[in-house]
Amino acid sequence: MIESVQRFFEAHPESVRQARKFASTTLAGWDLAERVDDIRLCVSEPATNARAP
Image 1 (cartoon, rainbow, N blue to C red):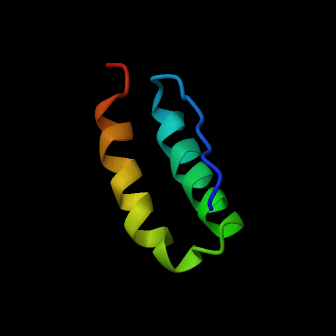
Image 2: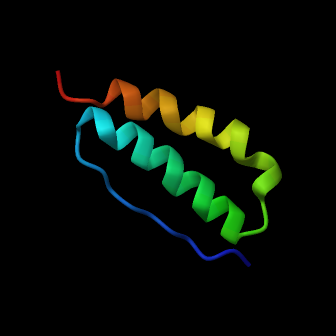
Image 3: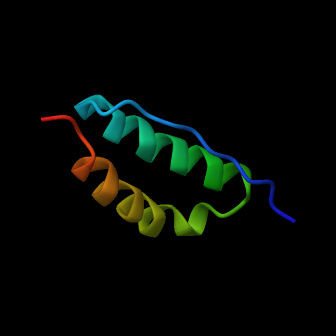
């Protein structure tokens, strides 16, 4: 069973990069590195839309 991991990011432009890195690092830790590109894309879209104006 894979342990659930979560992290919250501030609504700032630099948080998009941080969220993608968090996803990549977490997936690598779970030996799911082959899914990194797909999941980074899924993380990028809502993270970008959540940025503060």
